[in-house]
Length: 125
Image (cartoon, rainbow, N blue to C red):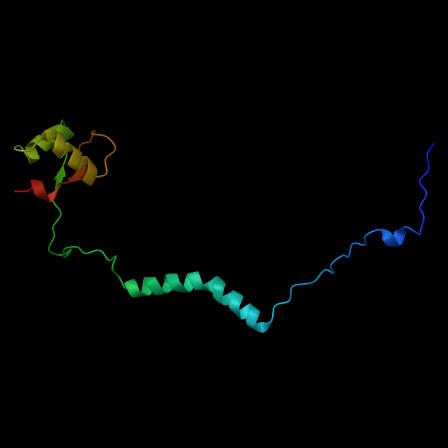
């Protein structure tokens, strides 16, 4: 068995490591104000830019009182294709069907008797 012997005479020749004292971060009143400004700066810039924009994204439309919506009622035995051919005989039937499906938010081309369909303005006489 081996033993380690410590001789105190050599202790002074060994390098001493000085540990840095742990410091606690303390913010002054000015430091807290600077951090508050830096954190809130993006919000202030966003609000300022939105207020300066001032309604540039408003939608414009025609007067609702003067713009009449034309509807067609589906009768028994009619399909969307036959309605499209009746509404706009000079246009492509497939294009008219696609427009009818889009403006009426239809998922398929099937319709039922009594259903009201909105007709796009460009196909009106």
